[in-house]
Length: 159
Image 1: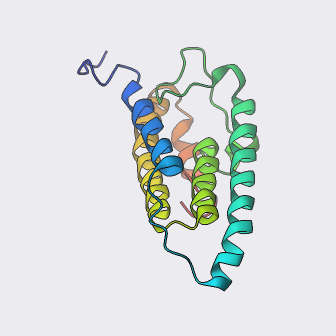
Image 2: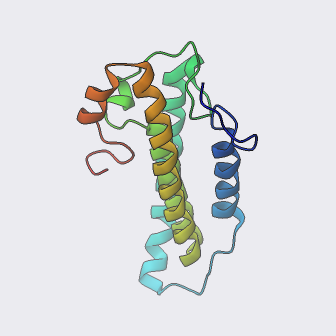
């Protein structure tokens, strides 16, 4: 068993605490808003709302697909099994993907330049969190290496 400082937790609890802080920053943080140009502003609101809805649906569907294996912690539950079907056949972390889409959707909806930065920071965070999560999954599931080669990490077809 790895030894961790008390503040990190042995299952990656600090990732969840930091994730909640980043969510709060995306939704409640300063938007850095000066008015966007009219044509861009007219498109940003509806596009943002569409991304929020699509991202929310992706995250919800992926969470439901995991069922009892769902955990906010990067360390998988002891009873988990490797899920590689449904949305998980398109992207290894569809819940993160949906949250990222929703965060960028929120930034467009509120038309905040800083909000776009917070959403980008969330992408970096999920990349780091997923690396730790994938190390634990690879240690538990021999088939994970092949899954990792076949399926993109956070954004289908891209990354």
